[in-house]
Amino acid sequence: MGHQRQPSWLSKQFAPSKVLFNVLFHGLHIGLFVYGWYAAPSQPCGAHTDPRNRWKQASDERLAGLNTLTFSVWLSRGAGLALSVDGAIIVLPMCKNILRWIRPKIRWLPLDESQWFHRQVAYSLLFWTIVHVAAHYV
Image (tube, rainbow, N blue to C red; front, side, top):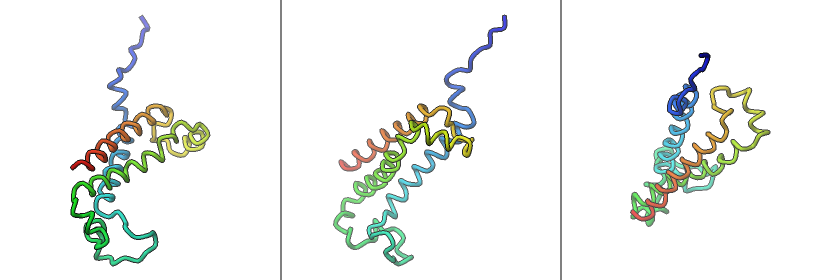
């Protein structure tokens, strides 16, 4: 009689806020990977570079020896950049003070499910670790 059916696990995963989060989160990671692959700076921050020389990894003469390994280095650099970002943010969803400050400002993130967010970052860490390690063996 008044028993309401709970939404299934699968339908919860396709909630609009989670879909938006996944698109932005994984889009950011793919963008970081591409940046790490092509344009990872080989000079210190603030060093002036020739704007025509956008793809530092492939065009820097100082990296010519590394570039003989081609895909191995390029894949590992791209995955390494994504890993560094994930390593920096994996503990953030577990920090209650930060969540209390961010929650009212960013409503589209599923911040009420901080453990879910933490797991998403952990899955991303696992994926990019596999890519990074496998790249060293290519």
